[in-house]
Length: 43
Image (cartoon, rainbow, N blue to C red; front, side):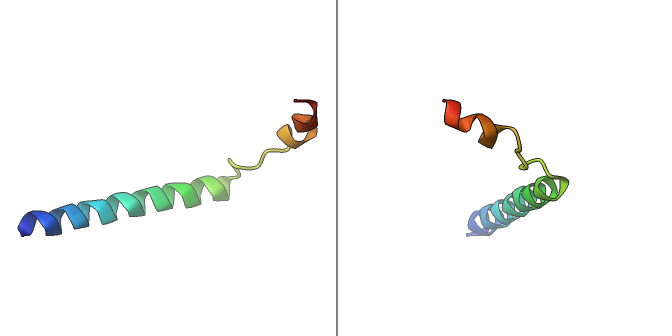
């Protein structure tokens, strides 16, 4: 039963890490794409 607690704890820490990485990337503007919408109609 201890392994279940360990796995849940590890998965929550991993999920929090991915969440903070996403928030940091969104805050830095890495998802802002101004070039692709202009050429999308060509493809």
